Amino acid sequence: NAGVMQNPRHLVRRRGQEARLRCSPMKGHSHVYWYRQLPEEGLKFMVYLQKENIIDESGMPKERFSAEFPKEGPSILRIQQVVRGDSAAYFCASSSDRNQPQHFGDGTRLSIL
Amino acid sequence: GQQLNQSPQSMFIQEGEDVSMNCTSSSIFNTWLWYKQEPGEGPVLLIALYKAGELTSNGRLTAQFGITRKDSFLNISASIPSDVGIYFCAGRESGGYQKVTFGTGTKLQVIP
Image (cartoon, rainbow over all chains, first blue to last red; front, side, top):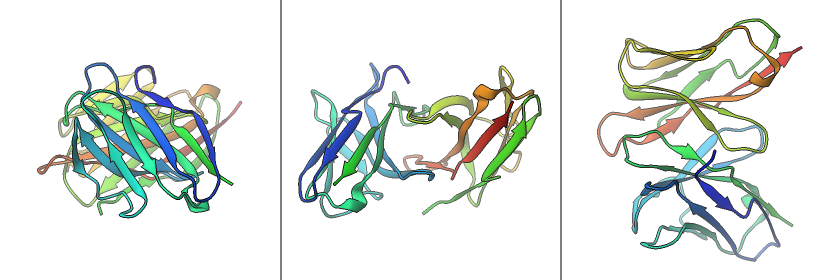
């Protein structure tokens, strides 16, 4: 998984707080994807961004969740007013082109107390 | 949304045995990808397939892009304990922005 960097690796929040998850794509990659994974389950697509633009956010809840990929800096997945059900592993992937395979980071494990 | 049916859901095998798993889709895909995920880590790309009928190997792993373009297979020969993990297929649809959809995963356990 060298290349796609996610931080923090683990994040603990209390209900009602905000969670900010960061993803730096592989060098040269301008396409970023966020996925959510519950224990013993598969990857659920959330959002696809290409530098400053949201291409597809069909998998992201309409409320409390937002994502951005600014011209400079990492992509951010932001969860406001977290609830227990937000506890999961959140993975970021990147690709150099929409036709190229996605490469994943090691994820952020979000725990809500 | 698009669903990929991946089977089997889980399997226990003896070290040294061969393993087969597959994915099927209701839609035609123009790319099939196979990933492996180990505990606490992100999925790692194993094999990418781009043409119907294509057969590609990566060490003891062999994957095939089905002729109908609606399925793909992954075989692991002579399994070893480090093959343990969850294997995911993923397919890219034709048209649109070519969204990638992931299968539900096959959890592989190898008994030494």
